[in-house]
Amino acid sequence: MKRSNDNQGFLKKLSRSKVLLLMCTPAILFFFLFSYMPLPGIWVAFVKYNYRDGIFGSKFVGLSNFEFLISSGKLVELTINTILYNLCFIILGNLLAVLVAILLNEIRSRMFKKVSQTLMFLPYFVSQVLIGILVFNMLNYDTGFVNNMLGSLGLELWEPYSDPNVWPPILILVYLWQNTGYNSVVYFAAIMGIDAGIIEAAKVDGANCFHKIWHIVLPGLKPTIVILLLFALGGIVKGNFGLFYNIIGTNSLLFPTTDIIETYVYRAVTADFNFSTASAVGLYQSLIGFVIVMAVNFTVKKIEPDYSLF
Image 1: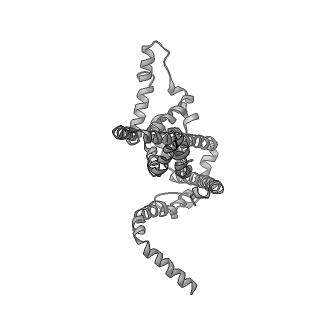
Image 2: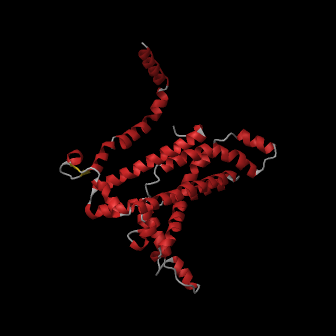
Image 3: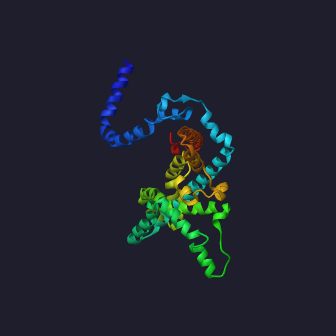
């Protein structure tokens, strides 16, 4: 009888929440179709895939596909490169996005605020192929804008495409230029959700702009920052292939500091079209990302339970 009553109570809750469930249906369908239905495809990582036999008919080879990265001796280097770049993207990207959102909130001219938001938002929609062309035209040794300026000033020309050490800051700057405006939208919306009455009361009590930001705005953004960081950490082992490939390309001189898991696997897979290897690498990245998210979420839950994902 207890189980029957529980079922009836559950059905009543569903009935009362049918409008909310209807609103959630597109998101539920999206994750079901693109996140859960493809899960059986993980089996490709453990077989020697061929088109004739299909995924489940191909020969089982166990962990042989994972030996591709391990035997190459580059697994550690590629993983470190990928994680370090993503850490810079996450930390610097979020700090800059929060700063931009706060500065936009302090602008009093509505027209200037809208124009600024639009201009900062536009780079996100620029194709990474075009970004690669722009970077090349800026830094090309023979005809690049930078060397043309240096030559006109009588200074020594710069050869960035033969120096791997200059590219980490360049790639980080390009990423921040493209994504900061887009990332700031979420934080700006969170600032708009802060109770205006609290801010007005602080002004009456003599709080200046910096007091308002430090004691009201930043604490109000804290839950949003933590949640977005947790989501971002889930993909910390997945590199931004479009950015790296279109800017670096196949210049082997720059690989020591710019090669990430995606670009390395792409070069290897396009050589022999080994989809099993690509699937194995994807599973490796997902497992590490899952472990990191669980560990960080566990830590956050111990410190601030209200800010954890679950």
